[in-house]
Length: 370
Image (cartoon, rainbow, N blue to C red; front, top):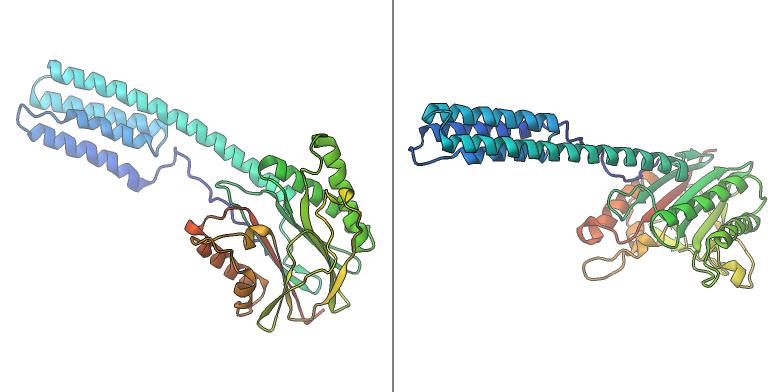
């Protein structure tokens, strides 16, 4: 199940809450009554400008203009009740109230237009998220899968962390990675890696060939975009797993990525590869090949994939998040419950519940049945 944490839908300024609307009207009524009953030398009419100004902070231009009109009408009633409408003091108060109401109404219009632009941008971000970082299926053959993406930046939907999964004729292949950098450039690099994985995961027969294809895609993109005077500036750490349906094993090929954790019997064991490869985009500068390593993966076992945004999260004292210890404390109720447990604990570990970097986790459980 996909648990991508994203900002909640925002309320437009033209759709205020009823409880908030009661405040400016109550203020108008209170000021009007007190001003009428006040001594002749006390004038509270200037306080009426607070009503449209307050409304502009949460409502649209129509409601702001309506509240301003009601405030002007209240000021006219005060003028008639206390002296006359032609009284110089009340005349200037009415004119000032009209001008200020018009100003804050225009301000509310600008805010509403800006909010509409933000709504459109969020819609585009959600669409891009679904295309670039597709949700993983909850069931993939004999596996049960859960994933989560925690964005560090406010209003962010996706970043440089990535994950993907694909069913093949013999099992399931999974990818998790972390692109160097942040922002739109990191999202573009992540799209390159994800696109290459989806294109080749069904074609390449083994993990070394698949990772070689990913490396070629990253290197080709780097040759087009990279500064010739600064080679090797862009790279992606990644871990690729191959889990066959008919064998109680899994294969891991790591390209500079943190090792997966195998959860079994209340323990969290890192699946440390003996000969990891450099990150994608850097193998052309290192004389090395790609080699996968096999590990036991039996029914009831859970493998946890993660990015460095998880293990590099610090608490107020500067301590890193102890992922193996916290994962081992998981009572065991499926990968979905595991990620809920870790996400809540990770956000509680980080000061103010804010991460310093994007974080992604994928949990895979092998079921006993077919």
